[in-house]
Amino acid sequence: MSDYELQIQATGKYYDEAIHAAEQEDIEILSSVVPGSRLHEVIHNPIDSGIDEG
Image 1 (cartoon, one colour):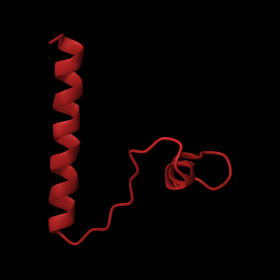
Image 2 (cartoon, one colour):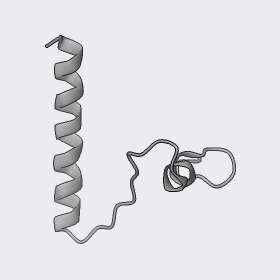
Image 3 (cartoon, helix red, strand yellow):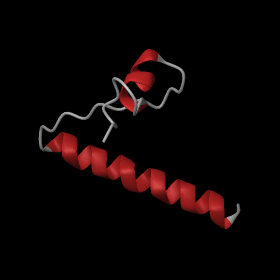
Image 4 (tube, helix red, strand yellow):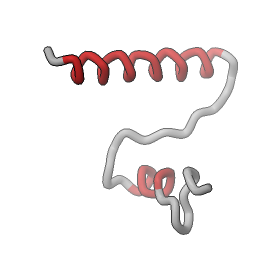
């Protein structure tokens, strides 16, 4: 496995653990890992309706 692939796995594990910790504190997290879905478009649209805007 390349260093890049190891880094991607480590990054994914880090964020999975962070989301799990936040969920344990009753923090609601809206996320989408399905590019092309309507939810993904709403979350990641920086122009008109995206939550990521700003």
